[in-house]
Image 1 (cartoon, rainbow, N blue to C red):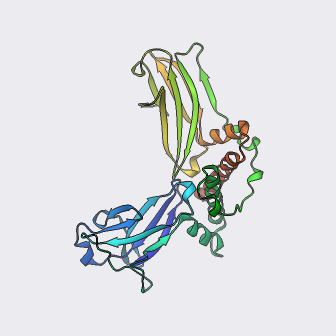
Image 2: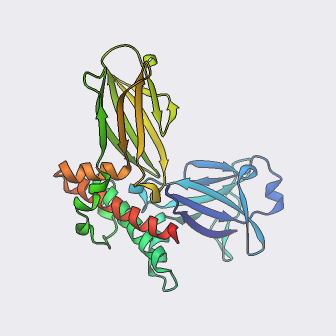
Length: 290
């Protein structure tokens, strides 16, 4: 029996489904839930109590550009046979239970009982997803209408988040720039090239912790992952030393990327993406502060 769905609002964009499962099915160690092509064993699913009953939670992460994409839940036994699935006494076994992040956002925005800060966050999140669809040319015809005022975001708003870079003269490392990956959570990537020696000659740190860069062609990449929405303004210092001497120091946040795009780009889709990112951060910071 499907209870319903929710979304995660802590940074990663997650879609969560809640299902009540009979004891007879729990005895089948190979029984599973399918969220489209992703399979999750019932025996490994986390649980929580809802209305005095034990519900099993199944979650999938959703890239920002796919907030409007519907995910369908179905239940199967260990023999890959569909198990009877109901929603409010309606048999939905064949069709499954379908939901999307945008459906949740639309419902929450429209509800008169939604607190203002949550409504603002849902509006900003929906706009962020819509802008991502345009920026990545994904199902653009079905994007949501923008509800916020993207034009209100200016370069001056982001001036405090401009990247800070200190690179020693004649440094044996070239800084090739940064990118921000806007998927279900936010990731910063810094790219470096070595002029001399091997990567083992250098020590890379993020927030004072030693990290191991990964190679991508001729570049070495330092990646900062799982940045939650309310922390998009947090700068992560990346330092490179050689023989104990600091040769590169960079302080960069996800909003530093937004600043750089607003400062240099003429691509309206990319500009709107970072404007929406900034408003998403503002709304998330206000919501989680309360």
